[in-house]
Image 1 (spheres, rainbow over the protein chains, first blue to last red):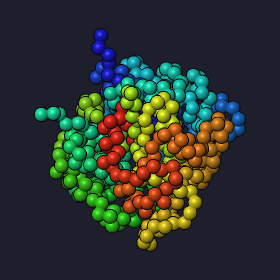
Image 2: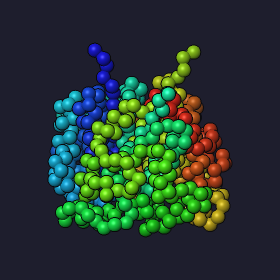
Image 3: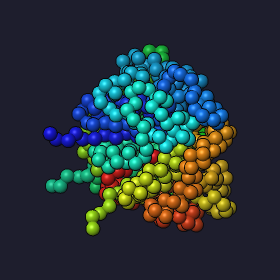
Image 4: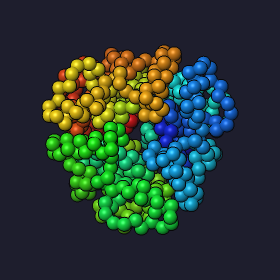
Length: 162
Length: 162
Length: 162
């Protein structure tokens, strides 16, 4: 059997529009028969953080950072024109209008299509997150470091840094 | 005849400096004999939107979003140090000083060098834009979706996400 | 002897988290036996600018731009949650906590591991910087243009735009 072409996407940004672009490309790639993996790091970890649940990190500073930066797919904002939520709310309305999935739906869809979702362990530390499976949604496949990402990228036909 | 090596650039950002970087690389690639295509999505659509002309989108929300986010190559701003236009104005002055083309000139130049300019149809919807040729400058070659971008990227020697 | 696989990273951003990601990947790549080069452009030039020393650019506007945009590895800020320095300070504390190198240490480490650090001459002009070796830290290997970056990227297994 021929090997599948690989698509590897690093997601550093937690902006709504960049998260959307990443998932549009990941699901499109999967539907084109590519083997897709997404590697979430820094603000990108917000996208795959659990939406509910308290803050379990250790130490005051980590707790504070978590409070300032709640994260979760439902709290993502546009990088521009957020205007205290108005721009983000308008874009979400327009997404519904054209039947574009929400980030939440995109995560579930990508997972079901076999897209691998991976959290960067190294940057969990500086984002005040415990590098444990329990920090993230159930769709997240594994937690690993930069060497894993580069290993995947070396074998990929297309690598994107978003 | 040997096939040309391909360079594919996705432009999600509408920041002045990222638009400049994208066009510098696209025109340099073309002058090096590469086959270049640029795929504009989200804020990147602002770069290739017409500078003049009224707002023709349907529905109140799209009209409002268009008003808030006029777009057009002449309205791009720096992501940092914009300082109510001062930083952007200063950079534009320095661009002239070193004979760097403006974005407007870069678009025309890229088009003349055979760089393909493509608008993402899917994200037109969430940006409040009508996915029609008439929304964009005459240099734009076509409107298409994420599958087209990935198809190009798979055949490319270099793919950049800006 | 087999040729080494190449990793080429363009760094346009001067945000602390993107600079960290770039150096984590560059040093990881080098430790995996890849031949790594980093190409700094626009705000990315701030990362490799000297931390000390006066402003030597010519002309009032360049001097002003330099004053507004001091640069240097020690002045990088987070793109979000900077909160007048609080968020950036907290992340730097957490970096120490988990023994992550500072940007300063990363630059020295990358240089010692053979990572090539290259400054983009073309964008020096629009950032108000003199395109001379003396503008940058001693670890910077050379100053060159976009054609050099694309030439490297064409030969690379992995190219990232950060």
